[in-house]
Length: 295
Image (cartoon, rainbow, N blue to C red; front, top):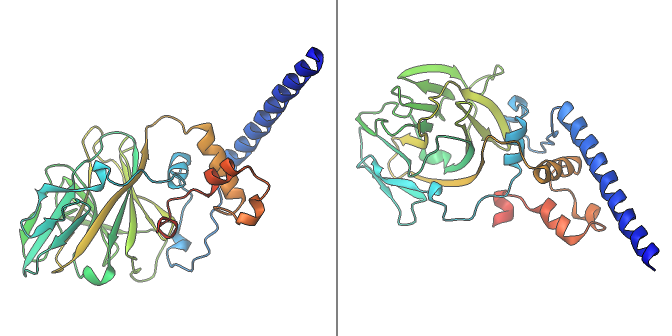
């Protein structure tokens, strides 16, 4: 009986070792091949400009969001134009129906380190001209007379003009974004993810589940960066939600494994394929932060 019990324990340990070796080999091959392959079923015009995200970002994009009510999900009640009003929960800002004014607001909490993702919901019909989305330091200009660029209009902010696809910084118009030779202006949908890598000093965007690459680089390292918007449309409502973030440390093995398996299954994977998988593992693989599944 003792011998049989010892053998069972030994067999389990060998199984763990073999599984670990297989997982390590799988991840090595996965990393060598450039990470997960996205299967975009959408016919979005942005899909052709999608680029493979870095490993840390790929893991973060596949990570469930933090719980609602996170302080980073709120607009600042004090750092905003007088023509803007933040709702009691802090997650939505509304612009008054005034003319000849450009108005901006930044997030209540920013970041000086790590990789972070914010979700911004802003209806296309509520943008008009000079609708900019990006990041700023605490010194960004928040109001100006007439219709002009605010986020990206000074040296303390970087913005993507959604109506023209133009990048702005220090009052100068840069290249069109995304790159890749897009013909004409691409219509940016209501939902956009803002990707801030404070350690690398970069800013990028995700549209229709497509990572569009780095829009800005050489952002000031060590400075606190806040998600920010500026608009001119009377009655516009813009919602902010912090999804998730991570330090500059390598991703956990569990996160890499989850991403690898989900990628092999084509995202969350058809539930029928996982009938033989333990329920705890099913919950881990099927857990996602897509808006459809949250509702």
